[in-house]
Image 1 (cartoon, helix red, strand yellow):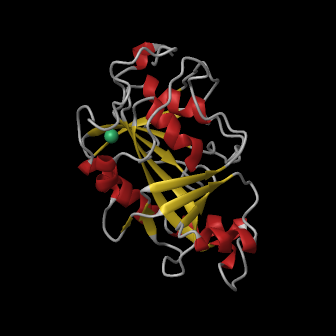
Image 2 (cartoon, rainbow, N blue to C red):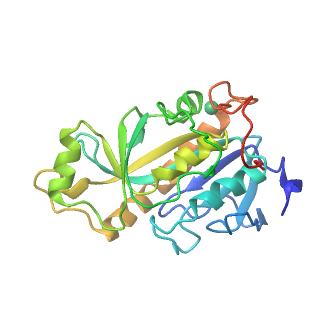
Image 3 (cartoon, rainbow, N blue to C red):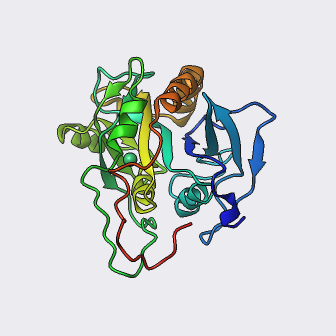
Amino acid sequence: MNNDGQGRAEIAVIGGSGFYSFFGSDAEEVVVDTPYGAPSAPITLGEVEGRQVAFLPRHGRNHEYSPHTLPYRANMWALRMLGVNRVFAPCAVGSLVSEYGPGTVVIPDQLVDRTSGRSQTYFDEGGIHVEFADPYCPTLRKSAIQDSAIDGGVMVVVEGPRFSTRAESQWFARQGWTLVNMTGHPEAVLARELELCYAPIALVTDLDAGIESGQGVKAVDVFAEFQRNIEPLKALVRSAISDAPTGDCPTCRVHTGLTLPIELP
Ligand SMILES: [Zn+2]
């Protein structure tokens, strides 16, 4: 697909582990190719609360991709090719705060990058340095704070795919950080480079490494917990879409006036 795809959707949802579909079986499916290869899966298009929405399962429809092998650049580029300007990003997280138990939804306001070796920019030349002090769109975050969702928190993104050691988790918690995740970086910064509003919606599936004394994290428990909460999470995302602003975002249009070394879709 080329730029003819523009205008097919205005809002995207990137489903995390266990969140592999969003629309009914009659949803339109588009196969998108990008200069960075194919995204994790074909993208489905549908209408939610009167808004045109694109859905992309982050890990592929059958969880083919691990956090460290995900085609992050292709994913975000493909969404922008379809005309998307706002992205809600549900994800599974471990909690570093014992009060935020499994099932808690948190809308983080900060991230710490502990990944390594991931391609985290579209601008390998040209001296482009995007502002990232506040990594998430403030207005889109507000739309995501629905029901009992917690407003704010620091999400540390680890390389994975292994879970944290007990010492790592305790160290993260001592820094005052709130959540542990494996995919929030470079997704957020790539969104920023493409001038997309981006807000994570973090679902707590476990207490990371048991924090102090629990059993630590097992993948099977993470998936089971996500599955238990998938319908309420989808309802929250629908409400967030309904409340999402329209038009240009004054915060996330950071490139205006710059000459970019590549042409954005
Ligand atoms: Zn924005």
